[in-house]
Length: 617
Image (tube, rainbow, N blue to C red; front, side, top):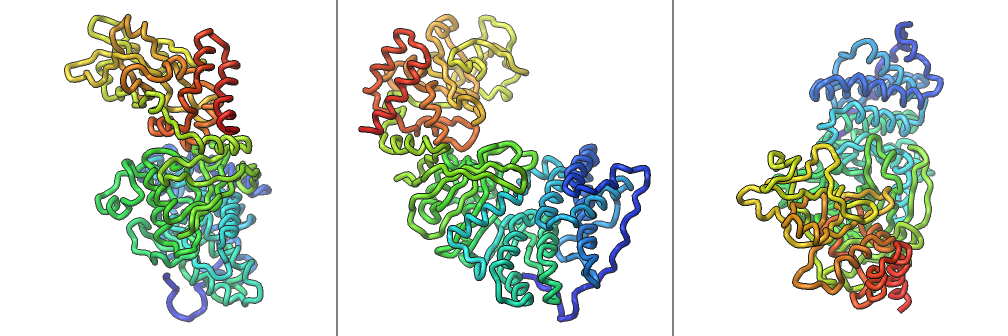
């Protein structure tokens, strides 16, 4: 860790006079509600940035938010004399280059931030920064800051998993704007009764560490951390050392196995890896890499045996094939102890639509039953918590994790664990529609002729489970002209079509329809686009007819099974082939109902009975 040189008194700075706001900007001076001032200011700052290209927009975001934090820093010290200078070892604050409206807005927001708790101020300043960032930069760095309510909840979970804030060494390997470092410091402060201020400050300085690739975010983390500890530091008569390092955590040699707690909200997003990085993290990789998967592997490396990992991540690792190596790694080296599913996707992380979870893992422990909770943020600082039962890892470590989404689903999962059958036992395999349409734009046609085939889009599978040939969406055309060498794009046999992308907010995640044999007979063949799954007979006649399988997949109970299974909006072939299912010989009743044209309610009831009957067997 970096420490300020020498034993002299902390650097001093003169307090700036309050800024005079000209009458031309009356909307800048109403700071009677500091949170509202920061929320409204964020929208205005975003508008300032939106008109710029990537490089100048990034510079504006950093200059603006540096000015905001600088004002907050000095305003927060008006009760202290002398003022301490801003920490400057991590990021060189750019000279004032803001025009008058932007400068005035930044100072207004900084004054408002100084009236708030530093952790709240840091979060609101952080989401202003992310709102101003260029989309490419935000996506590349995976910048999504954690609301204080979720950060506090994750610290509570880490405590329950065994974190001892009086003595633990803790690191956040992607500390962003300090969403966890500042609350951790406050937690250590509250747990250190009986110690003097100087002991506490030095203890935090020696035990807490943050790593961050964005130099501005690293500097902001240090600023917010010092503001949070300002009272203790003033009482101690010395400043906190620099505890944040600017680096790429994935490539930096850190103290592996040296931390009691690894905590954070790692960046996420698919990434192309250099051979060096892929080799370093290959034990948790299969196919495409996602940043948060790499950071999960890194956390395991950094944590000592018996230590705690506490992470906020997307839920996609729970089931997808690309994460089976990561699931195997976690099961073998750091099994989960508690999982919180964040029930809404929207409004949790600023400007993000993403299903997420909070989880704690214990390094080197044997897999055991984990508690599962639903959490729903009321606002950025408060959450509601509801128990959702228990979870246990599958017997085969890389398999998808079955986690209840409701208390009722806990009983369903008990039945699923006793079901060894899969789609392959029914005589089916799953593949993705082969046509990636935007690679073949020139072959799309609006009219049929002798050289074209029907193009089957996802909208051909209706929410009611019917097949309707149509191409209603933008850029969609109903026909496709194959060229020489395109035989692999052509489907000549009937199959069950199932939509590949659905959201948990939809009434059903599984939406299937049979591709009618008569439609194929009429046209000879079709081309199926890759937003559809194709569930096809493996050899000859399957044990369950396609029409019956379609009705089964569209049932309410199978939809519930899939929701226990899936962690993303994708309905992947891997997940479909891994679904636990009742034995094929139990389908006589459903086959009869489908044959006689029974209504959806009767078929749903019969399908549900297959699972409840299995449970009571």
